[in-house]
Length: 429
Ligand SMILES: *[C@@H]1O[C@H](CO)[C@@H](O)[C@H](O)[C@H]1NC(C)=O
Ligand SMILES: *[C@@H]1O[C@H](CO)[C@@H](O)[C@H](O)[C@H]1NC(C)=O
Ligand SMILES: *[C@@H]1O[C@H](CO)[C@@H](O)[C@H](O)[C@H]1NC(C)=O
Image (cartoon, rainbow, N blue to C red; front, side, top):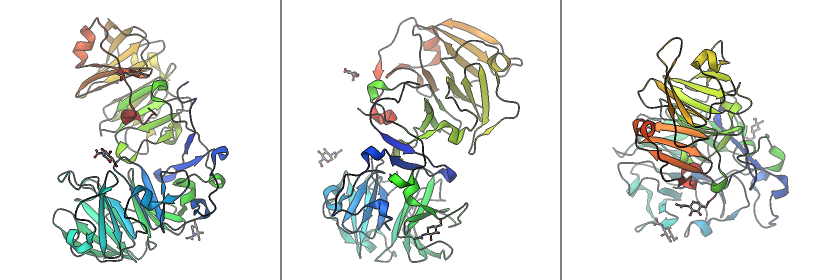
């Protein structure tokens, strides 16, 4: 719980409907006044919004841009040489072509500019049709949709109400008209959402059908930027890596990895879009006082706090299974504070760590019984995770790696401690 207490003040806040977070910050920090600079809190219609290869979101308007969800405007050319005004921008997803993957494409009139590491690639700018045959010039917006979320790797180019859908592999274009959607001046794919920005509002849509579900438009200032008068509450302070302290970590059957610390959770598998903290109650409504340990088993998430076990069905929204929470004794046949709990992929045993011992509980037996009780060489760990690469035990700002659960169970020595890094968890180095 101490966790994210000191340090600075990214107060990411969280608004909660339909998955888009709010970001705002302390009024003490609120904008340094730059008379000549545009203020996005005035309600700006952006020309383009895109992520870069590090998961930072850039917002463009005229010759200016904003980096991330807070802070003042800068000249676009300071971050992207040769760029001033842009019509549209997107970050490519194309894992088969590393020379394109995660590169940013900017569109200006009839030209395309391609950047990686904020450096213009050789041969650019070039006419749009050389890279994207069949796509018109003078675009309004562009966004990529990778196979999985769309039927194949696509780039959607917006111009008025027309959407030119470019198939990345086949290099063909199909044009659709989505008259029901506002004319988007910029479009962002962020986490699992597709957001059409229009005026100071945005509308979330389905990238395959254009269908809008839920109450839109919403004001972008409440969700995508830090505006003093648009607070939605919720505070999160990004910890220094040396001060990180987890409560729990788990990977579910869909490969989603969640970290828990204090009242927040964070997805680690979506780090391409940056690390973003949300209140635990946003996803798991009934878990109001943080967690001690969390594990995933058979499409369910088991969340342990004190002597209570909450079991949620995996999949969004997370729904608490009827009759829960139950006591640890009732559900797992154990008592006492749980430091960490984890299940290895395709196994049916939960390993429960309490101080200096690890209890194995067979999840197929009713009632549950402890099948093994082993001493651990490490004690008072915070969280544990078991995956195809082995087991990681987290203690404060360090973690310990074991190649397998068998090696951990048989081990009497403490392996080398590794530091938790910014790359792993978005903390400050
Ligand atoms: C990124 O660009 C900077 C200079 O702008 C350079 O120092 C650095 O080596 C580059 N990184 C990569 C991975 O190319
Ligand atoms: C923004 O959306 C609100 C509804 O949420 C609407 O009343 C308002 O007219 C919209 N403003 C613009 C500029 O689109
Ligand atoms: C781990 O972090 C500490 C500071 O917190 C630093 O002194 C140490 O060198 C780091 N160790 C490694 C292996 O990077």
